[in-house]
Image 1 (tube, rainbow, N blue to C red):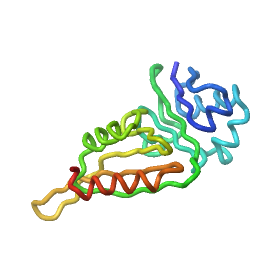
Image 2 (image 1 turned 90 degrees about the horizontal axis):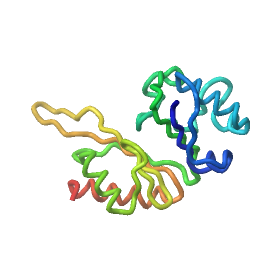
Image 3 (image 1 turned 120 degrees about the vertical axis):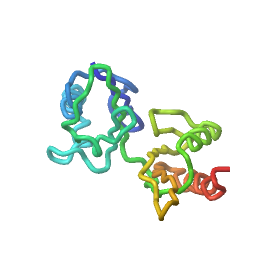
Length: 169
């Protein structure tokens, strides 16, 4: 049965940080979750669609970039549900910052790994993913998309930007 990790206000609404919820797709799991905790419906959905303000990750990948609510789930799958966090979000593509190095920095800065490409820091959540490299002739520069949400998003985003500007050093 898929595991669902709940964060921030979702944890407050359910009284749980983690649940096992039946379902063969992301949509089925979310519908079964709403059956258990009806107050989640208005937080998770806008009509029949996943609310834009909600982030749902399957094994660290945003389901919107997979098959959305139709994304199939293995019985041992892990979903992470993130509500919107006060303070807004900042996002940017950084060149030449490898994902392994950003992950190392986030851990050194006191972060906790939530999933592949997702880390919790004091006052913020950081998500990142590698994108297609920027190419100019024979030159290729790796690209890393980084998004930071939370009350301390701006401070953490600046710190990540400074690390990237130093060439990762």
